[in-house]
Length: 149
Image 1 (cartoon, rainbow, N blue to C red):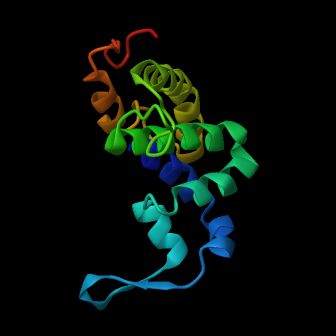
Image 2: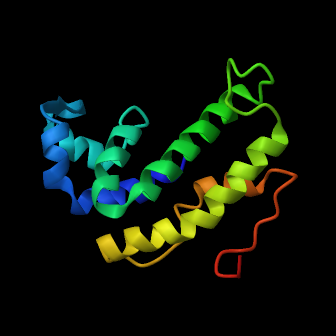
């Protein structure tokens, strides 16, 4: 999905806050144990993405949650395709999907700046996965990383 990288960077700085929501211990392969909060930060599983985004939005702003919701909607559409009846996907057609993809890409740079500031890591446009996947769509033209837009 790609949004996990952004959330993980923010979550790393807010691990203590996440500990109140993600309690318990995870047993990993090999018998190693990891707190639920550390597991969420390390793996940012899609089943925990929205809850983590809600918590992070309290500090970093509502945009974190809104972009996460958009990414989750697109993720759902990626598997189910557009659906005019709205049963399997929130998107009725490719144009509606394209609009949210473009919105997400525009906002992504702003949210990435927040993550970079929070983690003090070198800047890069997400993990390449989301952007590269979206740029393969025939209706979307993406500028190479580092060029405008």
